[in-house]
Length: 133
Image (cartoon, rainbow, N blue to C red):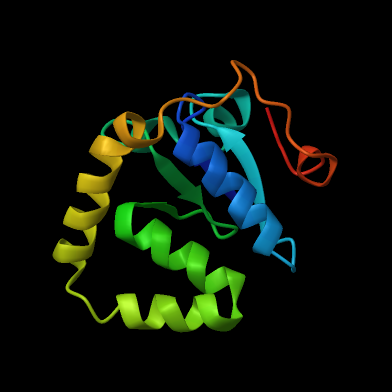
């Protein structure tokens, strides 16, 4: 069973991140769905939802909910190869520092990258099959 990557549907960087993950995920480790959508509401327990960031939330195949630095490290690790090595290097940073860097980037991402280029971007065919509502 793949992990679910929940992303901000109004963020251009988040859309780009989904495309990046899908393009580099050779093992099919991820499925993708917007935050707050039916898949998110069905998988992420209601008690876990308050306080979740509006950027990236991972629901792992074993039911864990990961955010911020932990979500980033998990995604890189699951991609494998050089990305797994990058995850190992980033994991050497104190988690508080990694989370602070993630939070600073997430706060500014919409200003730096804007929204998706289209109001409802059409994903490429290879990604369409891995999108959940």
